[in-house]
Length: 104
Image (tube, rainbow, N blue to C red; front, top):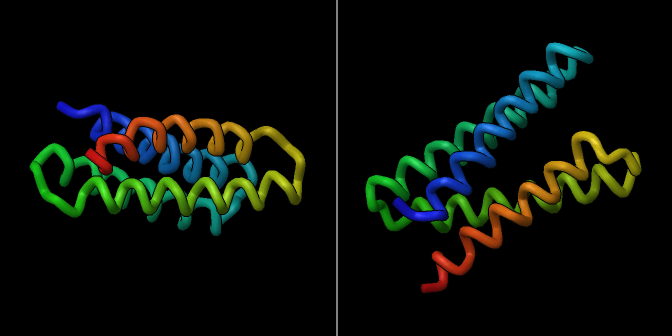
């Protein structure tokens, strides 16, 4: 199994769980929707990577990059580490794992 698979799967689960927690704690329906969609797409990309589909890793890389940008904008607006800072760090770690595999 590849490191890209694990990175996409872990970041997808983190996004999905984060969206669910945001909804359960502060009733943020937009967080539930965005976390669910991005998390499930990342999990689907991880499954595609595991199955050897050529589109899995590029999809994971694109989603990770988009989420890093989204959370960076959110962090600059709020200056709160949770959840934006944590998701930026996790996204950068996922990108460090995914991008070299994508380029090889």
